Image 1: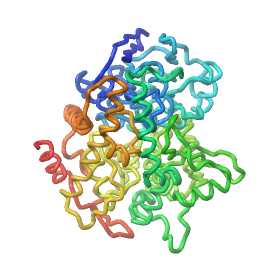
Image 2 (image 1 turned 90 degrees about the vertical axis):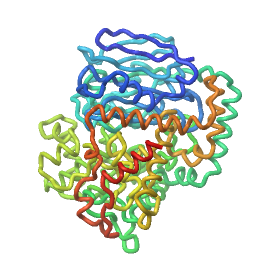
Image 3 (image 1 turned 180 degrees about the vertical axis):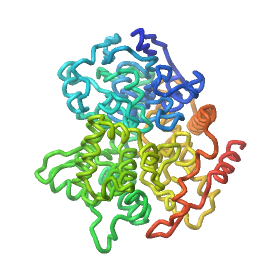
Image 4 (image 1 turned 135 degrees about the vertical axis):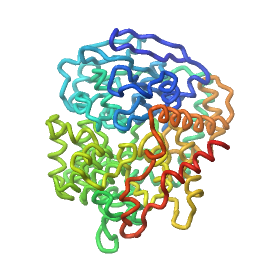
Length: 570
């Protein structure tokens, strides 16, 4: 049994609701969709006090079950106007589980900025945020640890979230107390800012009570053993997510100079520095850490700690999406430049996908030049200071594209496309078209599928299968990077869930959970006013064949939705 908290920020009251059994399994992304739909949130102003902000952790939260401590954050998105679930690794989900909490909802908004303290004795503190306002995430974290100690995890509203910039995510502590794991997408940090919550401090305690502890520990060991034998997991551990940049550059699906090309360099002529191979070797030579766990107990260790030429840490982590959007999409070729920009973005607590796509549009508009890292740093400084220009930039890619009347604006449902060009990576492109989450690869990524000779039905079927699996994974607090093992170990995972929270599920629940989550999200977006037209790719993807493959987008929203509708009727 765990508690779920309803926190009224206006009244500063807390209502605890006991949850047990399947209530502790149908959680995360599923709970967000179910709650927002049942509470009729679809038509509310996303930056008003009427938009609840939901934090949720899965049935293994607080344990050392590898890659099973992610935190889901959800609300109506102020960026897309639709439903949003953003999740992050780090230690916040661990803290929630160790406090015997399945999650909490922030209702309303306060009159004064506040720090919420979830204490290990079960009480809740509402402390003044005076003295923390306007500060970057790293200074804020240091000050919070001075005040609350080191045995806490943090969820932070950065300076951009304070003024409700839509680039803002919610920064969560990693295993080394860096506030560098972001629930990044959809403007969830702006919603936290609209509620005048500067930080949530959660005490770290000890592993929570489990229904059958020995069986759970056995499940932890079994899953760990399978991870250790999986070649894809080994690749993540050695090269991190940055390895995807090498592959995307090779197949010509890498976003380059505002999606105007699919390959940054010809690797027969020039070294591809913006990928996993080069970064790993350089980082090892410099004394950096190529394998780092963002969550306690995670054996995938796809994170890294990136060092400069003197061996000093620049940033943790350098991830593929940041390399793709804030890097190659902006014409950046040197990983040191990207790492320094990434560190600034982490301090601001902003989504590097949305930020990189926005900067690419600025460069397309000739406000800056592609490849100019100094210009990007200036843009980030404007955003930090909340100047007139900075606040425009902080509204995201779609708004900046409209302001400068740019034709090539890579968004779907007003959210920036992630680092997979849909002209080449067609299955992920279909996911980004039809998901209720906006253009988000994490809703169902199929990056390595060869599709040039495949029909729309074949590609859409692969996309939809990935969407179902991912929706279930996100609803259980699991990391998608373990999916090669998760997909074949559902019986063992289900047994471990039953042992943890006293359920009697069989493995078929996983697919059902994913399907139901997608259905609820789809229903929410329909209630919010979304139509088939909102699923269309931007025109330039159809009109401009992508070099070097010379491929253009083939599928439109109407035909993709015909497949989706047929699937739902089955």
